[in-house]
Image (tube, rainbow, N blue to C red):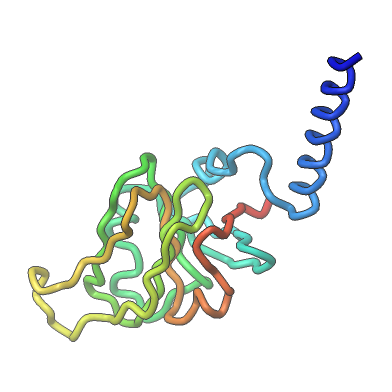
Length: 164
């Protein structure tokens, strides 16, 4: 009899957890597998909280190195860098023409935000450019226009989802 009650309680807790996750529209399984299926320069919608953000995906060594360098504006609402492995990564603002926010993401979760990263002074030598990195390993980065993290109410702990 006790085993039956424990089984029923575990089943009820499982159903409640499932319903809560569905209600909050959170992924039950890691969404990162879906991000890894995206192609370089593809434009997709991502969801953070209740905000939909249109982003350009970069996921090759060439495109992640180039990033937003040389552009006059961000293009879409953001650029999503997807890396094949989780590592401590360093970003710089080489040839950037506008200020940005950098959202550091590990396994579909925002772990840190570097706000109001300034564009470098024109003709700054590469060895004088500042580098930016999070305090932990990451496998994705979202670059937004300056104050974009505030605009979209993005905070550490938020879940990043691919809208399909």
